Length: 503
View (cartoon, rainbow, N blue to C red):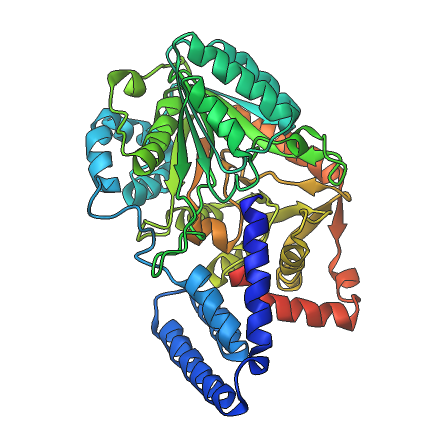
């Protein structure tokens, strides 16, 4: 039986026991248990209020814990407590800073690259200072629209691998797409190519173990990132690896929003056409992206890939732009991606164009977008017109932010009646971000994420053209019409918005 089914059955049984508590214990003890439960809920709520969470999260968790005492506390213990942020990054292993010291000396030319960015040098310098994010200007970046195009190029480049393939994904599902990729990975491993396959335990909860066994039996090294466990004081379900990375011989790399599954290739009946965005990068930034993989692999397996072949730089003659690989995760004390995006939005003069499948904003991001729009910047956000499978409440949470954004002049568009999964931020005509980052709490606070921030590269024009095409296939949410939505819809939005930081 799949682990997801087991978890659902256990959780359902727990709820049954809780809500039928009085059937098993006398009324006297029942009242005493209720009193103790309420006291515990109050103490937990006080702990939340005095903690270091964002104010929005404090409010949501406190209400949940106080109004649903037993269930709320259990949910908080499993999903809400931040046990030293991320337990695997502990004193027994090399820290992120230790690994940066090993690798960062190879990026000693970043000062010269940043200087060439002119007015954008401040952004690049800030990001580098808060996260040691390498930047390079010897790259060729290709925009890949949708899974069918991404998989075509991915399979072609995997076939060319001669030294190593580093493969890291949040979601990998059995099906036609995975079978094709698996076949190539196994073939290359048999030919002597080093293949490493890193998957997230939660994202791949439905991936049958037989596939992982098959990979291992054919010489592929397999790593399970942050294996789910419910050991007391160390639940690990929250901190997920949201990366979608493939690095081939440090020459070619792939990164962006597209996981491995048939729905990304438009083969799922519910979604039909799945709109998404990915990048293929040739050049120095591929090595930078590989270091993101190296860190994930080390903290998963204990194997540090510090051989020269993993750090060798493959340059492509191109001085027209620069690529900065930015990664973030719950182990960082500084909100790298969130702060980077706020800085990018604040620096915009002409446009802030965003695509995100989930729009759940904290106060600072909301203010940045509203002030940009009020200042005359063209702020546009494309969200899905069809909610993600099983995530209707998240879609309602996205809609709960429409009213306040529309009031300030932010333009919001729903992508037809289809799902769009791209994660894009375009600033003016010369800066863009493409990666794994959604505009929601999970991406900015809980997940391991990565994005490529691109400066003055020709691919930005391709991104703008692609965005305009998506706009042509979207319906604008007009403020006047949105105001006429039903009273029931407004009530639902208000309720969902309170708890949106928990989604």
